[in-house]
Length: 253
Image 1 (cartoon, one colour):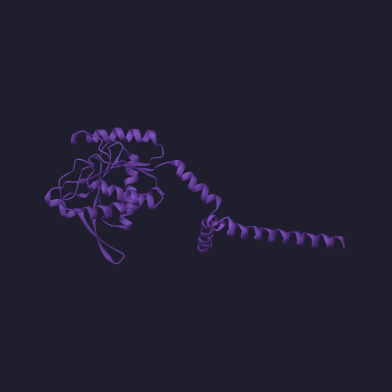
Image 2 (image 1 turned 90 degrees about the horizontal axis):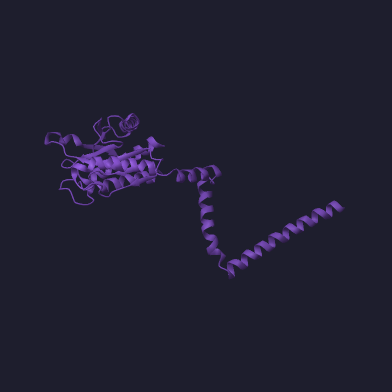
């Protein structure tokens, strides 16, 4: 009999606790505007239920770790005033818009980056040496960096300009692209390996996007030639930059 009374008392206590909790929430919603305070949590919970996957501690730790690691890619410009189909500008030119598109693609894939569009040299001839010094400083500041890109557009002879154009079928439509060339430092085997992976992945997904790879680039950076100033348009360069960001994210993942 004592056992039955104890169970009955426990059930009564649990019921009273639930009733008190319901009453507290009801009063809170009515008088203290708890509904607005709790709304974000309710929406998040609903989204988790709809997706069928609640966040785990492992996933949360992974996200936090990614933030602590810092940027993996830096985007620089030896000649930030470069444009397509028109003379170069004194400040930021159209090549910087291409770099911004590359940065957006990296961000969508969760890859940290540093975008440095400012002018780093007082003259055109000093630009390559200046980029090397900036790359060295960025590596000291961000040990997490895996690759530093120096974005350019080419200035090819007239006879070669048709080779900078590429049309690919995507989502049932033809897309016009600016072909990309990769230039490597003579003594950087690690960058060469990464460039080779980008080229290989590009041939699988976007055949012909990469024109080739040469060891004539500046020190410590992977120089990326985004099309030609006469053969291509800014829109074509931006389209290629978006694809390049996707390829780079795959290689770094």
